[in-house]
Image 1 (tube, helix red, strand yellow):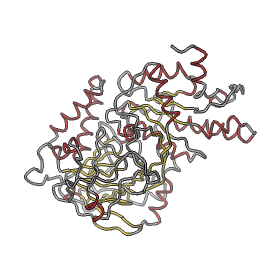
Image 2 (cartoon, helix red, strand yellow; image 1 turned 120 degrees about the vertical axis):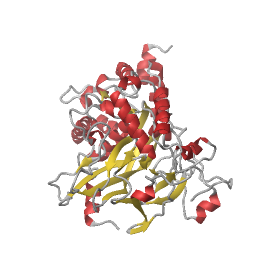
Image 3 (cartoon, one colour; image 1 turned 180 degrees about the vertical axis):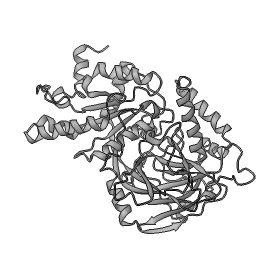
Image 4 (cartoon, helix red, strand yellow; image 1 turned 135 degrees about the vertical axis):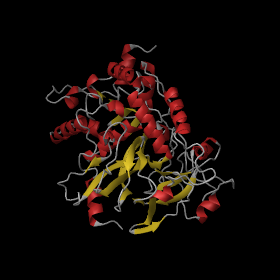
Amino acid sequence: MMGDSMLNHILSAYYIPNYILVPESEAKKPPCVPSCPVLVFINSKSGGQLGGNLLSTYRSVLNTNQVFDLGETKPDKVLHQIYATLGSLKQRGDGFASAIESSLRIIVAGGDGTAGWLLGVISDLKLPHPPPVATVPLGTGNNLPFSFGWGKKNPGTDRQSVFSFLEQVKNATEMKIDSWHIIMRMRAPKEGSCDPIGPLELPHSLHAFHRISQTDKLGMDGYHSFRGGFWNYFSMGMDAQVSYAFHSERKLHPEKFRNQLINQGTYIKLGCTQGWMFGSLFRPSPTNIAQIAKVKVMRKQGQWEDLKIPRSIGSIVCLNLPSFSGGFNPWGTPYRKKFLDRGLTPPFVDDGLIEIVGFRNVLHGLVLLAPNGHGTRLAQANAVRFEFKKGAANHTFMRIDGEPWKQPLPADDETVVVEISHFGQVCMLATPLCRSRSMHDPSSPTACYNEDNNSSDEGDSPDDLEEKRKFGAADSFKFPDEFDISYLS
C-alpha cells in the first residue's frame, strides 16, 4: 500500500486550491503547480447508487470544492465563476492561476445526456482556453465515453478505481471533435401543437432544445423555433421510438432501472414490442422515413440536393462519432473501391462532415453484431435538412445524444423543418483505446477502409447564419433551477 506522503504527492498533481475555487478565499498556494488540475462534475443520480458513491470517493481524495454534484450545482455557474476568478488573478500577475487555466481538465460522470450538457455549457461560455473533457460512463449506452476509450461499463467507485482514472486523465491526449447545430422551425398550426414532447412532460428535459424567445428577432412571426446542438448523433424513427418508451418507463418506475445490464435488457425488450422487429420485412412500414419527410443534404456550401431514401428505411441516424446504441458503429468500415466510387471519405470526427445511415427495422439493426456489420450508408454531408408535411403520420420520434422526444407533425398544410449543420468544435480527452479518428492524425486507431468486398450499400439564409452564431453565445444549455437531473441519461 502507498504511504500517506506518496499518496499526497500523487494527488497534488490534480489539486486546485480554494483561493481559485471559492471567491474571496485567502490566497494559500500549494508548494508546486499541479500538472493536471481537474474539475469533477458528477450526476449523483446516474447509475443507480454509483453516482452518489463516486461523488463521495472523489470528495475524499481531492479538494471537496473541486468536485461538484450536478444535482445541487449547475456547471454554467461554476465555470463562469472559476474562469472569472482566473481572469482576475491573471490580470494581477498570478502565475499560478495562469498555469491552472492553461492545463485545466474536466471530468464529467454520468450518461451521454450529462456529458452533452457539459459540452454545451463549455460551448456557450466561449472560454478563453476551453478545457478538454474526460467522460466517466455512468449511463446505459455510454456512447461518448466509449468513442474516446473510457469504456462503456459502469466503473468502480472505490479509491483505487478513482486513482486509476485520474492517472488516465493525466496521460490522455486532446482530440477535437465537430459540434453540430440543430434548429427546428414550424408555423403555429391552426389546431393542436407541433412543439416537441418529452417523456411524460414538456421538453425542458431536452436540454439542447430551448425555445427561442418570442421577442427574439429570429422567432419569426407566426413560427415556433427551437435550437440546440449535439456531438454524437441525431436520429429519427424506430430507434428514437424505443428510446422514448425506455425513458418513459424509467421515469414512471425508476426503482426498476438501477442496474446497467437490466436497463440494457429492458431496452432490447422494448425494441421487440414497439412494432419494429418485423416491420418492413415484406412491405414498407407505414411510418417509413421517405413517406413522412423530404430529406436534403448539403455537400458543398450553399448547394442543397435531394437525398433519395429507400422506402424500406424506418430509422435514420446522422452520426458524428463511431458509437451508437451502446458501442455499435452503424457506418462500419467500408470496402475501399466502392467507397471511393461513391465519392465518400473516411469517417473522421473533425472533418466537418456527418455520416447519414438508415435502418429498415430492429432485425436490420442486429447486423451491427456481426463482423463488418453496418446500416445502409446514405451520404456524408456538411448539413442535413428534413422537411415534414401533412402526410402518413401525425407524429414521429427523434433523439439527440440519447435524449428522445415525440415530435408532432403538421395536421394542416404547413411544414416542420429540422436542419442540422456544422458549428465549431469542442475538445475531448482520449485514451490509447480511443475508437474515434482524427483527420489530422493518420495513426488514430480506427481503420479507414475494409479491403473485403462484402460491403453492400444502397446556401444558408442570413437568419439561419445569425441563429447558428447565437448558438453557443446564449444560455442554450442552462437548466431551470427546479430541473431534476435524474431525467438525464
